[in-house]
Image (tube, rainbow, N blue to C red):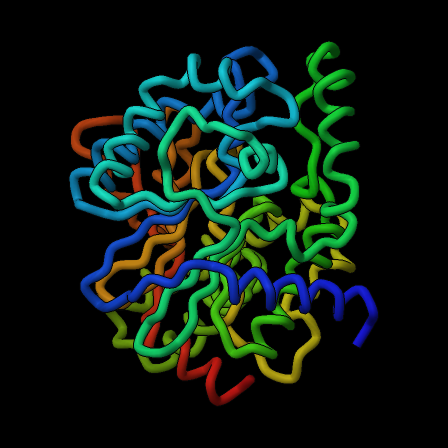
Length: 355
């Protein structure tokens, strides 16, 4: 094992041992968001674009359906903006957070962009603040943390990054540049968390890279897997179903080709992290500041789902293609789309036997 990995594994062991643990059963309902990067409402505030969508989703869906909410790091963009200005700008959002917290249904973890929260003498909110969170599901561990802890360099250089963003990027109107723009950094962080999770036989849920992951599979792998499944299904399907299956295959192929055209760096996209078996131990909730909407992780009824929320006025592609079934939120322009779903029992069975 490389020295860097040993250091990271030791950090993650300590983080997991110090994280509070909560029982999780098939009646539990949790939604996990990460990477809001809330700012002051100016043109360099990355949260501004999806702020209204996020507010509607949290208030009109998760709050009404009695979910608990875990905000998994980088909620405030404190490397660019003062906390006081962020809270003043986004009072309705903090009112929602307060509502969850008052019902003891809010957990907030710390990321690298809001790391200052851990050293402030007095916080303007009374939230359950931690660096990591563990869930005990039938004796199995689900380990939730932001993800920067898997990078030794991020721990050492966080202050320098903050200085650069605040005094150079902000005055020039440059938006946030982070690990989410580097395939190499994304891959290295994911790989370390993946191998740690395999080693410890835990399910890990992170954010930080802004890249949604489900069962250790990136978008490309998920699409390939779906196409393979549909091809097998086509051979045994009744004639009346063949047309629908062909349409799905065509749709997934088109999406896969579009992704490859938009992403030049394919060498790093060997997404299964070079293990003998594909082990579904790594999940990533993605980000709230995506160009086409919001992604999150839901845990409900013993299932875990990767969910995409979007505003049809911003991105209509998901309404136009087959392969997904978006659900409209009330009579709004907001739509919820389940990208992947599986049972926690099945996932932990694979982790147990294949790790």
